[in-house]
Length: 91
Image (cartoon, rainbow, N blue to C red; front, side, top):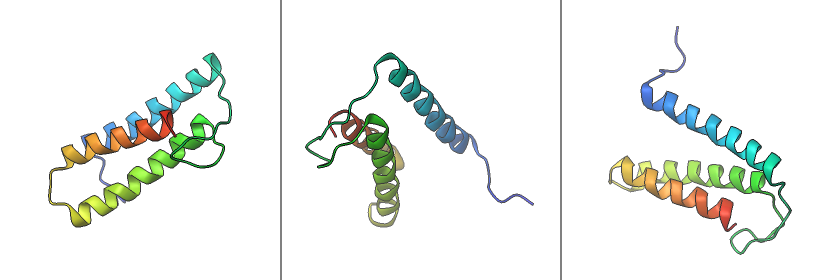
């Protein structure tokens, strides 16, 4: 009995999260992060903290998008990528 249907988009999603985590790990070794306070997140955070907050925010945004917005999910993908990039880099 299968508890989850693994489709190509699902596999790409989880692979992208894995690549993102590996990339963040390599970035940490090359350039260690310092705690800083951004203008979006008003507390001291590291890059990893901001990545986690960005991924969590994108999950909530995706759930709200599915319920309230009748546009295609490709638009959502672009919005989520920009959201996570802004939170991680500007945070």
